[in-house]
Length: 171
View (tube, rainbow, N blue to C red):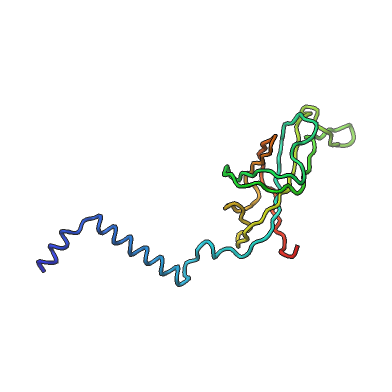
């Protein structure tokens, strides 16, 4: 009994913490090995092409031709984290609009207060990992409302994802 008391007195708090950490790590490893706990790579169901729509609202531009063009590449930043260059599949641009009542009808016209302001939808294509929660691109789940920055040689526009389309692998 006296020997046990001497051993206990020699054990410090740091030794106890190290021992507990090792035991917990072994327990987590065992649970993962027995597939009770699911690791992140096992959550991926498949890989597929995705198209996502990025809405660019209120873009001020005085040039003659909108700088974002179909078929070109744009560098994408998702949630302020640089990702990569992706293909622009389609670009839809229109001047900022306003509704005007002309006495009998409500009509939509280009807003004369903002002659150089545009709204745009840019469709971008990429390969994604598909999980139960949806598509994952650059470590981010693609969902509506996700902040995205498009950057080309002559522009840097901020927008948000408005739609995500997961293409079938047969397409």
